[in-house]
Length: 122
Image (cartoon, rainbow, N blue to C red):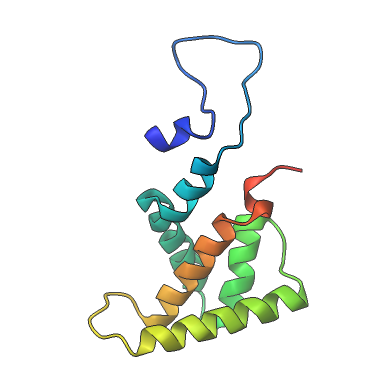
């Protein structure tokens, strides 16, 4: 997968004692614009929203799945405001395959994938 080359994926032809680590601007651009990342955000949103359709529950589940922790009360409030705003914006558009809620949750998943908490290992 060409995208993984940007993230220092190991080659299958060479052996080395230690993998190199790099941080380059193109990594952030790939995470924001790559079709694969957008698809995965959609899958995460579908998986999180499959329960009962409540936005707060879906948001909490997305945090657990992506970040391995529950969102704080403040983070949940911010995420609910984000999803509500995106849902309202998508409600006026016609002809979309996914519901406004699903599209808004996909946007939130994309934001989570681009967060430093998701990208870096502490």
